[in-house]
Amino acid sequence: MQKKRAVFLALVSAATLVGGGAFAVHAQSTKVISSYGPNNQDMTFDQIKAARLAVKAERARTHAALLASRYDLKEATGDARMSGGKAVPIGPTARLGGVTWEQLDKMTPEQIKEGALFPYPPLPFPDHAEGGMLFPKMTIDVLPRLTRFDLDFDLPEHVLPDKAPPIFLTTRPDLGDVSKGKVITLENYYATFNGLLNPKQLEGLRLLVTQFPQQQFNATEDRRTDRADGMIGVACFDCHVNGHTNRATHLVGDIRPQEFRHRINTPTLRGVNVQRLFGSQRAMKTVEDFTEFEQRAAYFDGDHTMAAKKGVNVLERGSQVHFMSEFMAILDFPPAPKLNIYGELDATKVTPSEMRGQSLFNGKARCSACHPAPYYTDNTMHNLKAERFYKQILVDGMMMAHDGPIKTFPLRGIKDSPPYLHDGRCLTLEDTVEYFNLIQQLHLAAQEKKDLAAFLLSL
Ligand code: HEC
Ligand code: HEC
Image (cartoon, rainbow, N blue to C red; front, side):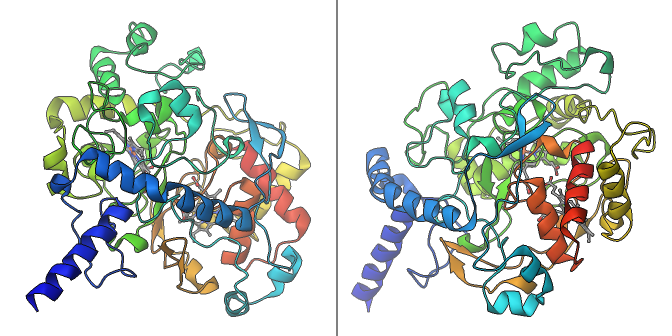
């Protein structure tokens, strides 16, 4: 009995190692499901690295095959530009399993589920059993310290935001983009912002671009970067680049076991001043709370024991958290010259298609029920029950489970932040229109979908 248990534990620990991540004991390989991550103090960095490298190529192949089966990933862009000048990707990119959009539109949720035809089930993380913070190449090119030896970002750059998104300040709209086209880092933040911000905001910005220890980026043997020197750690603006986003990805900290955790898509910080709920599901009530929670818990997958081991940086609430939040609260949405003071289209400035799109948005398509002007969010959450359309099965290491209630993300400036939804499963605005057409059972005609997408681009 004793021996059997030892063998079983060895198996568990082997599975943990191969998975490598914080909570990689998955249900398929063992009977033990723990809320806690492995304690790797009995392994060396080299052993952990070797175990990760042993599975790297195979997991990358499996994930690439899944993406290729779901999406057409070749570059397709139109005339529309993000506020930093990058071309907005166009879609829909989702591949349909032998039906047309028109046929899909006529099917019931049950029929779509039975036929495994839903184009937008949850998107797994590149290595879902492993997880962790993962940065797109365009950001690693600027900040090489963000390189992971075990995992590469999965989505192509043409479906990601500007690599150096503009920064618009609510306090100085007259200045336009104050980033001057560069990624703001610890090296250049002071020269760029001294004289523009008050001292509290300047100090808040310094903290937002300063890296601190995190689950994959730390000095212990249990890290996923070769470096263990003074450059270790991540900064808020490594993901929320220039206060916007590079759509770096992570697994949500709130859910267990591992295969049920959502992939999450870094949201923009533009417009946090007008919002009341933070996190796709956490529903934190203030930016201050979210700032504290990011570093204390989300950085370590919601595991305070790991945070203690790896060197959590506890921010001081009255000054540091407050200063960081004060800076975040002046990050404005990008200019939308076609909108009037109600956040609605100015009839003298728009195309007929945009105008029809607005009528659909507020009428037949009922988007405004959850996304009312002027910021196009109702500041609450909704359960869209996407699981009506797919079966709960394990795909690429992730359970295709219920999303549950999710925050209504604002749509102001939405063209700047592909890919869309909390996990990035809709690569383009056209995909989000197809998504809601099915979710809401709207039965929109092809031209109506085009008009809605045109309206979204004008926000
Ligand atoms: C992996 C890169 C990453 C880093 C680094 C990061 N964040 Fe986030 N941030 C995210 C993701 C992903 C979410 C969405 C979380 C969720 O869905 O629960 C988020 C959400 C937020 C939100 C809520 C936004 C909203 O619209 O609900 C705030 C505020 C925020 N982060 C601030 C910060 C601060 C401050 C820091 C530094 C202490 C930071 N973030 C570091 C990825 C990151
Ligand atoms: C019942 C409420 C509801 C309705 C109706 C609704 N939405 Fe949403 N919308 C949401 C929620 C909740 C999310 C976040 C879902 C997620 O991340 O999984 C969202 C997300 C989005 C996003 C992506 C935002 C981002 O930052 O990634 C777009 C675009 C969008 N909605 C457009 C529309 C359009 C267009 C319509 C009408 C055809 C519509 N929505 C109807 C609640 C709604």
